[in-house]
Image (cartoon, rainbow, N blue to C red):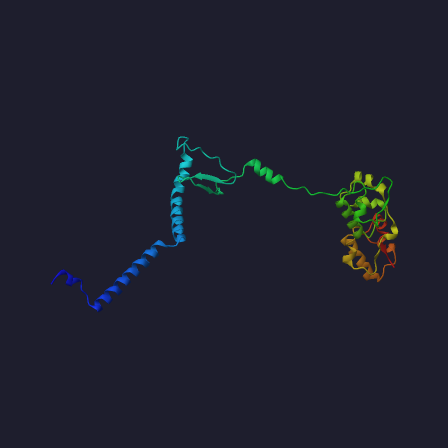
Length: 265
């Protein structure tokens, strides 16, 4: 048998061989194309992951080297820290920025003083004041009117109005000196600006008022209010000031001061 006989195949063998070669060629082609067209983004992700791992491994060493670095190290000059950030140079030439640690950042005394004192001052509208010679009626003036009187601000204006309410009205300008905070010197500076109309005074009805309401008046104490209630129970009705004059709880000065504020009707 010659060697040519080895190359002879029957029709069926030739068909099988052709099919086998075709399958091999297709498989090699697919493998080659798949390797050649591998997604670029996968490679980029892998590269980025590798770079990040390298950066994280180098960062501690770079931080230490920046603290120990000298001017002779590869000719690199030390960088000045930027406000609010600390810059560390890596061996790969990439600048890595780290936020300052709260433990290492401490507010200096000048900064603290500046922070505590730098606040906006409230703006106040200057209050227009009355001209000299103006007279204000104490029982009808509101706080806005009272603040126009020289020497009276918001605090004193409120106190004057509040005392007028519990008093029942000002019978005389002298009572202005009873307002809390108005001493003799301030009273002398203020009393010429005011007048008091006694017709605005509200009187307390002695024979019908309750004890707790009676003792709220600044001129009547708890003991005096209780004595009036006892007189009412005994007499049924008080007819006039002579009933209070018989009581030890009331002095002549008390009665004089209360006359504008009590009514026996």
